[in-house]
Image 1 (tube, protein in one colour):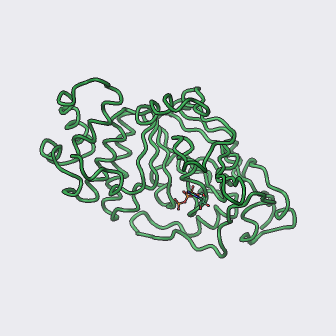
Image 2 (cartoon, rainbow, N blue to C red):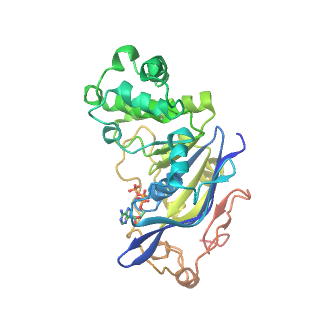
Length: 329
Ligand SMILES: Nc1ncnc2c1ncn2[C@@H]1O[C@H](COP(=O)(O)OP(=O)(O)OP(=O)(O)O)[C@@H](O)[C@H]1O
């Protein structure tokens, strides 16, 4: 694993709603190195996508904004950079693979044209025709069969799995330092899903790209990631290496998630069933967001926010935010 490529430090992102400015990413910190894969897990609404959109600085407008924190790409803080600078970072330094391959591609342009556009980010002014060979290479790299012919195909002429590969080709076209893959597998069937995950791993082995992988699925995290952060209510409740967190989950939420880890070849719509609802967005939150659903809740949990502290496994890279750590539960 290489040095940190992307470091997120104390990131706080808010949405300015009629009810006030509500945090959707709250004091989030993590880093990812070259050749490393970080999983971000948590149930729907926990702030995973908002974290990704904050890094790319494509938050919903006009309501979303980064209130504080740093996003360091090779030590350069992206927060506060003018839009024309950030626009250069997107695609060139950070590639994003979005949730649904069916909507990530433009139906009116050929596959080749869409990959060429991504290539032109790093090769401005290069005639499109001369990039065609490179497009074919990229399509081959992501295992698109019959690439020379497929360059001229439109998205509707391809299967879901094939389209996902093209989205992968677009993401790597700019040879980015970081790829953010936001649940790229949900729209795919299980076999294609596994092939796709292997593809991502191959790309990483070849290019040393850092990958941030956003998912509901801890089975996938176990298979693909080196380390993970678990998000709940916009906060990180636990983080560490996959080995440490799986061996000794320290937060009751992670513990509950791990109780129902599906096997990777089992399709699940909902990963786990924990009683109660995820927290609603709130301007003024007191205590631990998980307290209303926590089987170990104590008085302090309802009125003081626990700090992100060393977890139970003994590793100083394994942190969790829970008042009950180290207590019998
Ligand atoms: N455009 C918006 N307007 C208002 N609230 C929003 C908007 N987009 C997201 N939110 C809220 O922000 C919070 C974080 O959402 P986010 O999309 O980051 O969750 P997530 O963990 O990625 O969920 P999923 O797994 O379903 O994608 C949620 O409470 C969500 O309802």
